[in-house]
Image (cartoon, rainbow, N blue to C red; front, side, top):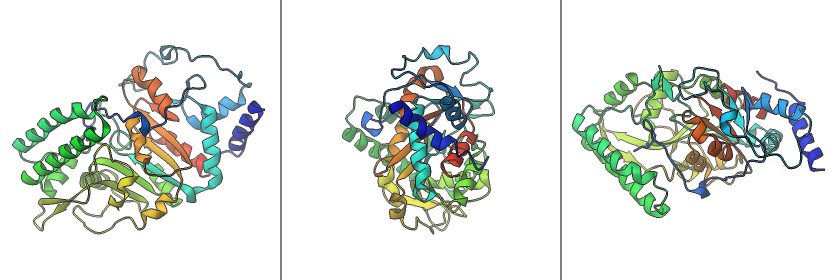
Length: 383
């Protein structure tokens, strides 16, 4: 009975077919971790499966003969990863689905509810942007910032060296760590003000930066905009820099995209004088900070525009979450969602991290993948 129900759920999805074809630990090499309660760590119920596309993977899975009721233990990861699959591999990336049955049920539920119930939550650095840039590690939205004052750049670096080990230490209690993260962000923001950060310095930093969006990001944004599906981009960095990256690298804006991040206040001369609202750091980068959301502005320093009514976003109880660290799963904290599909980008250290990522995420994209697999996924969710 369980096997028959499982196959009919998949058939319901597949038979319809597709209708359309940190500061800021996220600097180079930074890894952000979250306490276990920030995400659901489910046991793998089937062997890891590799495919160029999770949607094509589901079709292949459920066209096979039924699996045994008690699947065997997954084989060692090394037996399924090509030898050439490394952080610098130029091969077309694969995707990993650890529990295809659970994913099929989520796809069916979200598809049945329709686009009006769906929202997309995305991390910025290493998720919307590429991990590698011209063969080298790309810059993060905060790592690219050059204040124009070497003394203050060095002071911010010293703060990173002090606080980052605290951020990634799993033995420090959450409440204590949250206070220290608030302290770190506050000191860094103070240095940006004291060091005289200007709008021109932000523009030049972005223009000179080694940062780029993943291939397929524009296609994804256009697809979601056409269906009025909101995209919330969460970052513990600086919204003004992220918006400048949007303006300079995409050369357009999307009405459905809101940035949830720390926002600057500039004076008439274009110098930073304050930060607006609450401080967003790695431990509160979630929907509890939704009142900080605002669209991508037409120009740097534009004070206008905020989310129209974030209560409407909270009524969208189906979530597609995009992240590149397991801690990014905490971005949906504060949202009472019914279904969540979590897609993770595993950009490097694949053999070491794949098992943990496959337990945490419904789909894992490998080798600094393009966004085209996500485009294919949302086209199945919203045909």
